[in-house]
Image (cartoon, rainbow, N blue to C red; front, top):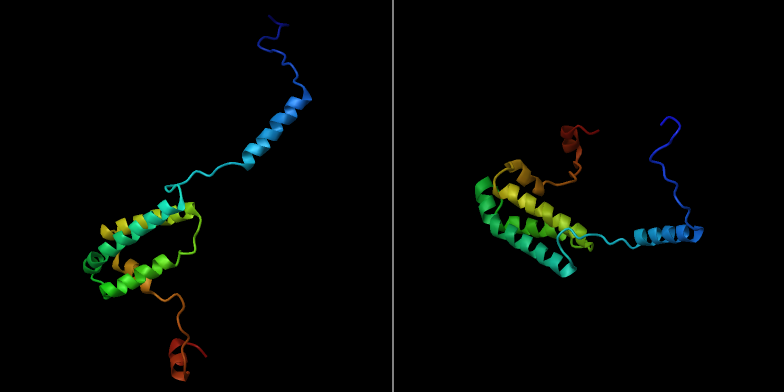
Amino acid sequence: MQGQITGHKRKKKQPAISCYYKMATRVVRSGVRQVKPLLSVDSGEARQRVLNLYKAWYRQLPYIVMDYDLPKSKEDCRVKLREEFMKHRHVQDIRVIDMLVIKGQMELKETVEVWKQKHGIMSYWRDTVEPKPKGFLNKFLDGHE
């Protein structure tokens, strides 16, 4: 037993052409890889999902205004809803649309179940850029020179 090597089998060498053929097919396979869709198969189905989400939000707005006691009217909320959906109207990739729909559904669920706080809802109306103060007194009170 001491001088013997067990379990080793010698492999036969394959011709070099076969090796190149295998390498070429690997390259081709990786280049033609299909992306698996998240939810929607085509753009029509993705569009339908977006419309269904919009309708669900639209139907829940009166209850959201009432539950959170928002100082906004239903019409103000509907305008903001449309504005939020129109932010992403340029998106063409179906997977990105599906991801936005999933996030929107999660947001709706959190809002309807009152898992959010009022300031989280009111942050949609917050201005992203605060206007600069005009006039000497306003600048002075704001701390500017």
